[in-house]
Length: 106
Image 1 (cartoon, rainbow, N blue to C red):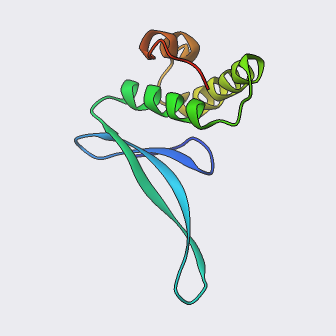
Image 2 (image 1 turned 90 degrees about the vertical axis):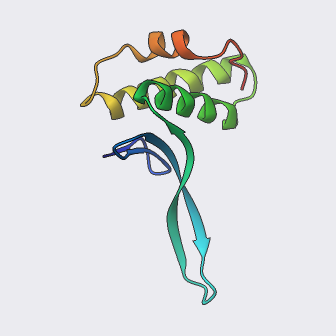
Image 3 (image 1 turned 135 degrees about the vertical axis):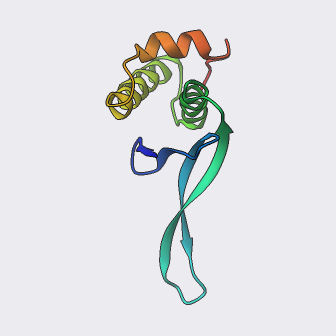
């Protein structure tokens, strides 16, 4: 199964695990550009994969200060909720707050 989050991030699965993947851009020796999905993290539960993806993207954001960080986090929650809605019905902000580490700095 593949769940596209946006053009650069997705969740994939196999019978044993969930995988957080990031699109990476490469250039071949002959100068042709191509994309490849890179496996970032592996999880046995979808809950942990979603939480990890949320945390990673929050940490990698360009948000500067608490106001921008909060706005980015809110938009990220909406994006994840939209991508996951066909699969699960969770209150993502509540879910994230239950599963995240207490360090929520950008």
